[in-house]
Image 1 (cartoon, rainbow, N blue to C red):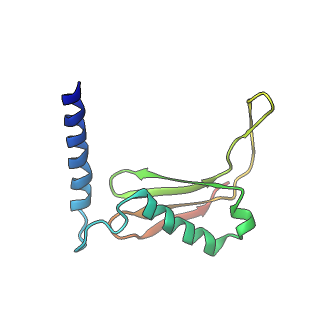
Image 2: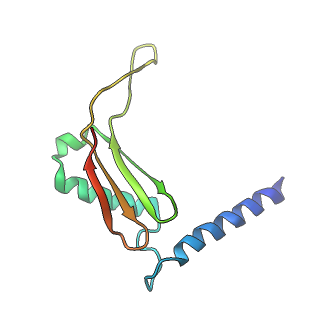
Length: 112
């Protein structure tokens, strides 16, 4: 079981390294991790959204294939007194793709 874990960890590290090695920059991926992508997204959001508007959203950052990050805002679900989730309507949060290799921001739009 422990051997299987090490094999999976080793293969995963090769996959991440392979993606970073594909970048044609002298220092590798410009946006190598989700935290860096989050900081970029926060800066873009701050430039285009009033602080009081952005406070109602949560920001999610996740891998979008091997070459980019997807960052998007969403309204978190509201829970009722009994723990049930109340459906919320609306949007208005920003969404964007951030290229891992170059840091280029694309497909920026307000969600509906």
